Image (cartoon, rainbow, N blue to C red):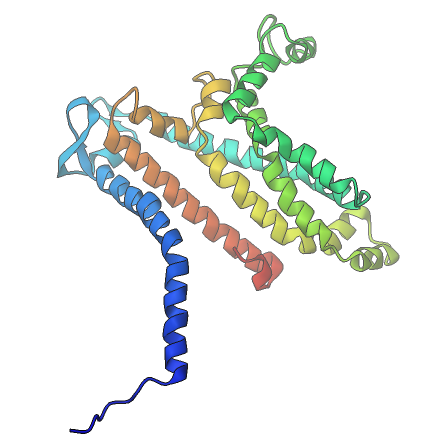
Length: 307
C-alpha cells in the first residue's frame, strides 16, 4: 500500500530543530521563574485567603478576614494604624524618589561631560557603596546620625532638633537612608541616556534664546526620559516595600508596609495578614508600572519610553 502522507521537507526539519533549540535555551530560565517566583506567589495568594489558626499559621476555612484586618477592622473595631502605614509608605516612596531624581540628574550629566578616561572611575565611585551589605551601610548611617555626632550637632544648633536628640531614629533618617541606598539605581540609567544626548538640540534651543530651564525641558528632558522612567521604576518599587532601612533608621517610628508584612511572619505571627499585605504590595507595583507606562506614552509619544 502506497504511503499517502507528506514527507518532512528540509525547511520543516530546520524549523523543528530551531524550536527544539529555543525550548532548550528558554527552559532553564522559565523553570527558575516558575519554581521561585510563580509558585511562591501562588502559594502566598492562597495563604491570604485562609484563616489564621494556632500560632498565626494559615488553616481552612477560606476567609477574607485578613483583608479586613489589613483595612484596620479588628475585634475592637476600626483602627487607622494600617492605613497610616500605607500612606507613610507612599509618602516616603514619593519623597525619596523625587530627591533621588533631583540629585541624580546633575551627577549623571557631569559624569557624561567628563573626559572618557574618567567616566568609568566616577561611575565606579557611584556604584562601589552598593557592594557593601545594606545592613552594614544602614548601621553606618545610624552611627552618623546618632546623638552627639557632628551632623546632629549642626541640626541642634539650627534648632531643627531638641538638645541631646539625634537625627536618628526619625522619618528624616529613613528618607536619607532610602535616597543614599537607591541613588546609584537612578544615576546609571540617566547616565546611559545622557550618553545618547543630541547636543545639537540643546545648542539650537540656546541659539533661540531659550532660558536654561526651557532648554532643559524642551531639549534635554525628552531625550533623557527613557532613563528617567527606568530609574523611577528601579527606585520606587523596591523603596515602597523596603524593610531594613525603616526598621533600623526608623526605630519603630517610621514603619512602612514592608515592615508590617515582615512582622506578621515573625513577631505578630499572622501569616494570612502578612500575605494580604504582600498582595497589596504586588497590586501597588502593577499600578505603578501601568502609571509609568501611561506617563511614558503621554510625555514621550513613542515606544522607546514605554515600560
